[in-house]
Image (cartoon, rainbow, N blue to C red; front, side):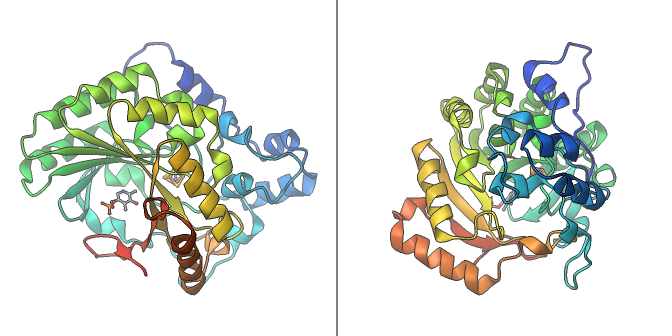
Length: 338
Ligand SMILES: *Cc1c(COP(=O)(O)O)cnc(C)c1O
Ligand code: SF4
């Protein structure tokens, strides 16, 4: 997967969040020194990086516990030796998204919903990401691809919802997002705009008044799905970003991935749900890991996932229990488990 690229075609100076992104940590040594970890942790990370580099915004790194090589936030971003092992059944394109590209820039794999690939980059490189091997440039996450995607959406009256996707769609700047939203507004069969983004969590400064203006100006109803996996990710800055998004108004949901060593316990996930509800986010999905090369060490067996999920149902109010789900290639929707 590419490193962060920002779709930008103006010559204006970088805004605050873009400067923060440019200053993100890219060197395992720097991250490990900052967290006072042993040099061998950094050395292992450098060896395991492969073609998917370390990338973590400082706002996210600041929430990690110094001195703890098992910190659940660190484990999501730090390359580990286990990534380099080939494991049978784990592949580069586990969801066979390459088959679902309907037009450059448009992925159609869910009934009635089209995914518009806005940009290939992310602000953070999550080691478990199912797109770590995805060929973005070839799939149209470019300005020309977005143009073709918008035309395909306009031509397909079965679509009622557009999901801005990527990479992380909020890496696109406000001008570009504004153009996209204005175009979508004029397509009569569309009713909803959805955004899946990890930026409100890893770089909450991205939620600017400019972004709010772009989204609030749309005639479409808005659903914003943030991606947080652990309660320690949700500090006050994230809570503030969520408040601003909820005020659009928008429905704010969370999608988490079940990850061994990070959040594979009912206690941690209950604490995540409690914190999400506290800041105004509804837990939506608890996703089983997609079987992408390099992520097998995060695997949680489905029986264990079901047992954890049963405990969540036994202890939390219904609205705080996420749906346990997984992606199955070729299915028109996510498959619910349990
Ligand atoms: C699951 C998913 C969707 C769409 O699924 P819904 O069941 O409509 O919520 C869209 N984008 C991403 C990234 C997803 O994981
Ligand atoms: S933010 Fe999402 S798309 Fe980007 S690397 Fe992380 S999991 Fe993958």
